[in-house]
Image (cartoon, rainbow, N blue to C red):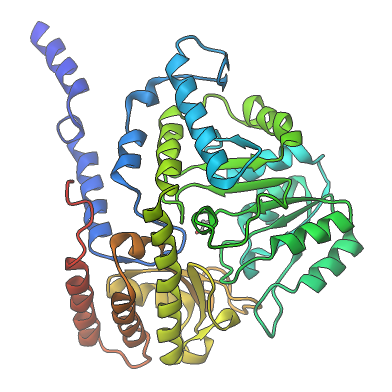
Amino acid sequence: MKQAESKTQADFLAPLKVADPELAGLIKDELKRQRHTVELIASENFTSRAVLEAASSILTNKYAEGYPQARYYGGCEVVDQVETLAIDRCKALFGAEHVNVQPHSGSSANQAVYFADLALGDSVLAMKLDHGGHLSHGLKVNFSGRFYHFHSYGLDRETGRLDYDEIERLAKELQPVLIVAGASAYPRQIDFERFAAIAKNVGARLMVDMAHIAGLIGAGLHPDPVAPSDYVTTTTHKTLAGPRSGVIICKGKHATGIDKAIFPGLQGGPLMHIIAAKAACFKLADTPEFRERQKQTIDNAACLARCLQDGGINLVSGGTDNHLMLADLTNIGVTGIEAENRLEDVGITVNKNAVPYDELPPTVTSGIRLGTPAVTTRGFREPEMEQIAEIILAALSPHVTATEIQGLRKKTDKLLAGFPLYPHL
Ligand code: DSN
């Protein structure tokens, strides 16, 4: 009996590969997948070892409902400092008046802004999901579309760009109380000052969801949404390269409402290990190395876009200003899902994506979204982007054979071999 008890205790304290070899094996499989694929999903990145270490720390053990110096649990003296560090670093990085680092995700952050700012059924104007918006920007089956009265703006059919005059016209006609700017699949810079002027004109508040471009904004490479907006929400794992989580930035006058909406409105205990990982991410984002990486991310996207266009691929809006592009594959006779699968076969990960005015359903789509944050973190520069473009163009060619696909997979493997990922693991 004594022996059994001590074995249980030993297993409890053992590393994962001893305590749970089945799960450890799956994590190893995922590491192998990440190492052996070219990651072009625009919303993904490879976080730093520092962030991984903070995220897997013993801070996961601590309950800390409330906010620093105002908790509902004892023993919070250390986690108070952790959360304050994350808040102060985020404020400094983005020039924010108030920051809440407790949202578990970008969607939770958006939910909290709506919960703080809107009454049920209030009218909101946001970007259409199938033109590049997000589920939480008013999709009918999402909480946002169920609880509030969302209207949407889209992209101009000819230019594939936001049409600010049309957004202004809609705002005047619909008189929303909140306007949401920001997107998940828009390849151009967004004019937040213009959005702010439109909102002011109709007496609406402005919320910017900067999840995709937060890293570019932190590096000063995209117009700033923080000064002209009431609220800015973001995830922390995309261009920012932090842990999978969310943040809300707002003007001081909205601070109490936002904090109450997160806790006790929507969440209980904050994830202190993830807040610590966010603190590490904000510190790393405030460095010349991070700013250089954001610049290279944009340069890599521009290079990939140019090569794909030279190879006959149409890009929505004719190119990119940021970290992503949206390829409309209609002219080459390949659907989004076919392209996603074929690229997977050659070791390149992308996601199928609706293009504006897409006639195919969201499970099929006419396009794919490609982004460069993860490959840039991995060390790719223009020469590698040119090679990736060649592989993509060959894989999407209408008459590609199974043997050619195998050959392309070998080319991908060769390219990746020069850029080891997490060699310490
Ligand atoms: N699902 C994210 C993306 O891929 O863009 C948005 O939250």
